Length: 454
Image 1 (cartoon, rainbow, N blue to C red):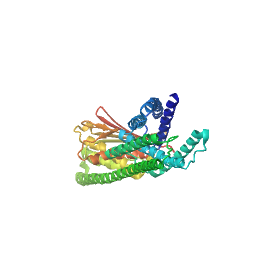
Image 2: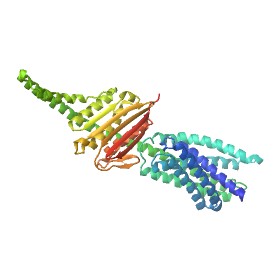
Image 3: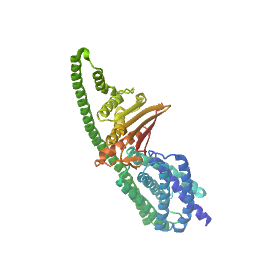
Image 4: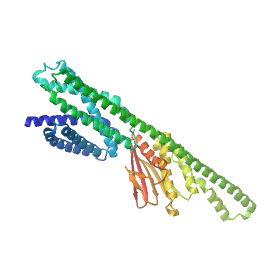
């Protein structure tokens, strides 16, 4: 009985090893949680402890299809919870990656079974003798390595390429459940059924009909898992295309808003120029009787041009200057201390989109505040060593609800307003930065941290 228990423990440990190899591939683009390595190692220890107990369940009920399904669902649930602990992502995203890895593991396993059953039918392994287990594992893991490489380049790499940024939707949940159901049910039912038909050792059959049926089942499982992985990759790709459409719609909307701001700025400058002509004419008419208060009034009128911002980055200067003029016109105090030279690693489009969305969100919040003294926006861009900090603070009215670390808009046009914050997160992720948002004492704080080391 002890030897049987060791066999079941070995089966479960080999399954977990293969599964975690695929986990490493499907989750390598996910954002790691704080204290990643303690979480990873501690969670792995818990999974291995649970696997020891699962071996006894496997020995007790593993001879039935339902029992084996229950054991593998338990193992998958434990490992998926471990991944959720290690990564700072929505549970749906983690579940999706875990299910894709499970389907890939089953695909590799079934491909090997096709090879193995063919070899058994041709008596390739009859001469292995007492070193049978050694040769078996050498062949299996050599094949497994090749199969994993093939699955990665055919399916997983494309899926990862299109998973950057954003949360997965309900379509991903459906795909995850489909992948999990197919892999668990097919694998468990086939293995239990054909283990009773095997002669001498598992997957060796006396009757040709049993061999054909086993290979047909293996081939069906391979095709099913391949379809699931292909569907997974295509669904993620389509999701990215939808996001690109949303981004274009958001860019068009932002362009409309920018046009309105630019139009208002030009109107403001035209009004000031008209005032200059009137006041200069009045001063000329006064001659030597020019009053000091008239001069002060003229100086106040031209103070709007003090809104020009110089940061050392020409594109950022233009953007911040225009926002400053907008703030001047709308009674908003805009404070800026920015070292634009530190932002040279950002592409122009990303820089404009990043700061445009950050400032527009802050201006929208303070513009709705009645008290003039609270209509304040602070922007800081500063470097310290190899790190660059971008920080904004602004007052706001009402409440802020957060989902996955980002504030959720209460506006009716959720696509425009929500996507602005998501686009900030996408750009931060693109450059391997860290984004945090929080509220305290009626002030919204946004912090972005980039590593700018050479």
